[in-house]
Length: 145
Image (cartoon, rainbow, N blue to C red; front, side):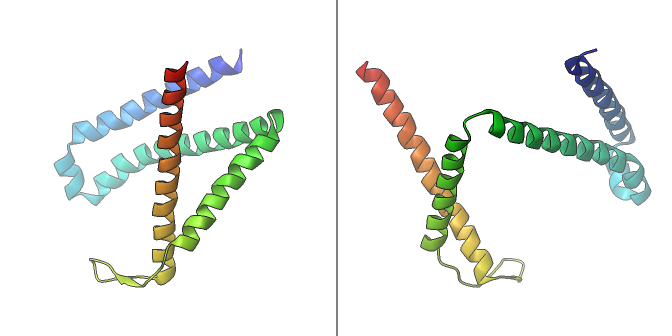
């Protein structure tokens, strides 16, 4: 039996188990589950563990295939892409400023935390600008042909 068939049957089994757990949750009703901690534990916990299991397997498989793909493909281009991304993050970190801020719930966000939030936003803006510029350039290039 091939790996594809095994994974297909495993996904089917996990899907059926998830549907059974979901059916139990729906049959019990959300008001009863909200009112009872015992029902929350017996109905929601198994459903969440299935989700955690699927998430862990997906993360593991993605990690394996990414590492295998790195060694099969052109590692030079991969290193250039990762290095470019790190340069963008460093530039964004340098451009952002951090000040301690009081949040709505009364807790304080540290200056370092605010600095990283700003860097994340600036990184997003830079990458979004690059993506938009690439789409515009591609469209102009297609029109020129």
